[in-house]
Structure formats: C-alpha cells, structure tokens
Length: 132
Ligand code: SF4
Image (cartoon, rainbow, N blue to C red):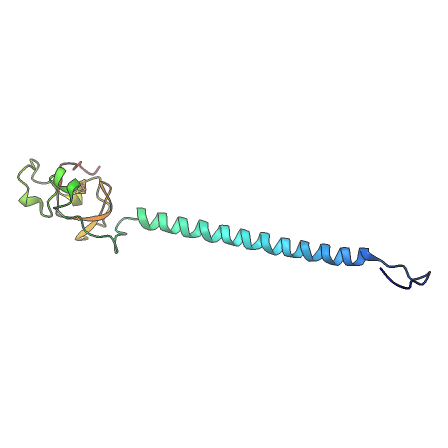
C-alpha cells in the first residue's frame, strides 16, 4: 500500500502479476522440457539395456554358468558336451541349441535357460533343443 498516491498514478499490481505469471510459465515450460528430456533419457537407457540384453553375443560381463550351479546340475549341464553321460544326440551342443544367444563362432554366450549367465558354446544340457 502506498502512503501517497497521485490521482494520475495508478498503482498497477497487474504488471507484477504478469511478470510473476510469465516467470511461472517460463519455469513451468523449463520443467516440462526437463521432464521430456528426462523421459527421453530413460527411454534411451531402457531401450539400450534391453537391446544389450537381447543382442546375440552381448555377454561381455555375464558370468559363466558353473556345472555346480543347482539349475545346471538339475539339467546335467556340462561345459564340454563330449563329457556328458546323458546326451544321446552326439551333434548337440549349446552352439546349435535354440536357447543359445551367443554369436556364431564365439567360445561362449548367453543362454535363455540361465538368465544373466553365459554357457560354453561346446557345452550341453538336457534342455537342449535344435536351433531352427
Ligand atoms: Fe546349452 Fe541349450 Fe542347455 Fe542352454 S539350453 S545350456 S544353450 S544346451
């Protein structure tokens, strides 16, 4: 409130309102742009991770399945198919199994049966199914 007001000087709070309003709109726009950027980054990261997970041969950091692993034991997994006592198809190994996601010619790669782990290309387990 002004202590003194000239009759021709009209105090106009609407100017401050506009300034504040524009400031809020600008801040709101910046926040929405940041939110859009954040969403884009998350999408990019998730898409990239999914692609890296599903990509054949994408196993650089995945640990190898151990023959001592309980699931591996249950499925009679062996690192060398030639050492299996239960394998009947002598041509079957991880490299020609449909569950194997390693690159052709690689020594090892991911297997759908052992999420987050890799198996030897020349390995084998009882979940083997011929790659189409
Ligand atoms: Fe190997 Fe196939 Fe068994 Fe996986 S499911 S360990 S690729 S034989």
